[in-house]
Length: 278
Image: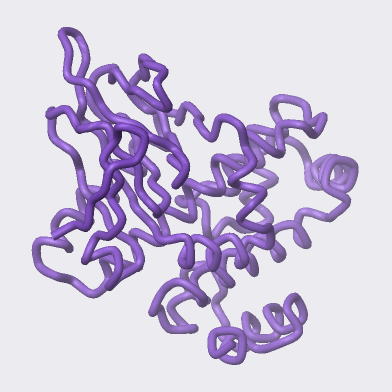
């Protein structure tokens, strides 16, 4: 049973037994309203039904399908069932300790994420489809008590964090629209194993032109940018999942484990095995 108390007129959910045990949880909320509440952990939700009526810190919002929102421990919120609105949403909860590990692997402090004034973005149809497909797989895994469920939840939380950061923080950089879209596509979960030739194809320019643009806007070549991105992904997976180093190497598109180990050590200064132990 959850430990609850009152906080500013809202139910404060201090403990969730499954969250305490696993540090992450997932559920797909039905078309039912929720009571006004706050909690000591972080929550990421995605509206997957019709438009939702959502109250956040005493302000009501109409959220269209596909909205991804992060709820901080200082927030009070609820979903309101009303004519024309649905409460259906998928929900990922993560402890501060686990989220700090994810942020550390992404190489930015958690407080940077906490300082975003409105950590809310509209997912593309492709991004929403990706989350929905993996959430359906999660439901089956959780029903069967599959060990990989927590791994997949961490992956989706990491992806949600990356999307919020890319669209909220990195928007300050003066990228042309096509380049910003390309960077978002490269960082999406379905392109975790993307190769340099595939980036050239996505960008629609010849290799020399793409290299010029990457050097101009990121200070790196395409090859170096992908290397750093994949090493950051590897850090997340090593810190937050039980996937083997070989499984991580393969998922990132490396054909040779020894090559992955060498690239990772050049990037972090230690081998993947040492990084995971630390």
